[in-house]
Length: 240
Image (tube, rainbow, N blue to C red; front, side, top):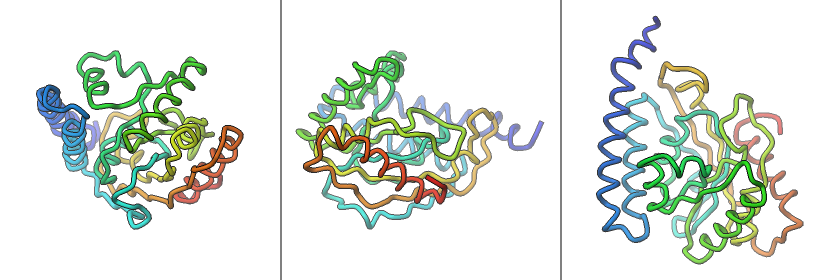
């Protein structure tokens, strides 16, 4: 048994469980006092910060100067590890919601938090229902001026960068909200996709310049998706 695995079993995993249970209870208790999910998102961001420390992530955030603190955005980028979620909660100083697969909303306690905090469900198995969900989400983003985070690859991947689905482009077009590409580097080393040991290390979150979507139509979703993927690839330093 490696030292990293032993440390994970005896130290890291128990602390992650404790942090998750404690912050989950606090978040659940906030529900009656949190009409728009803001307090629960703040709780989630604190949980993310805690996990970056527990998992030994040395966080480096680049490109925040590209963003307007008063604006709202659709954040879209690569997904390599379960450690991506705490890293992004730490790195992005926005009150954003996740676009998450619908199956997560049926998990006890987690599903309650996702719904009451305002995260958005999307079906990965039913394309027609997925489009309806994205259309509703676009309206919500526009009316409430929310920021949303989406993984256009559709889930965690083992390669450098998989083809992007059109969800981020549809959200941007429906809401007129700029799409901000981001690149996550190092999270797979912290927590491999099929691994158990958590090793820590440097995690870089690179934030690109917002891509305007105002005035675009349905015919533009393909080119917009390609542009987004190319910009994420550039942030990662990999071939498009």
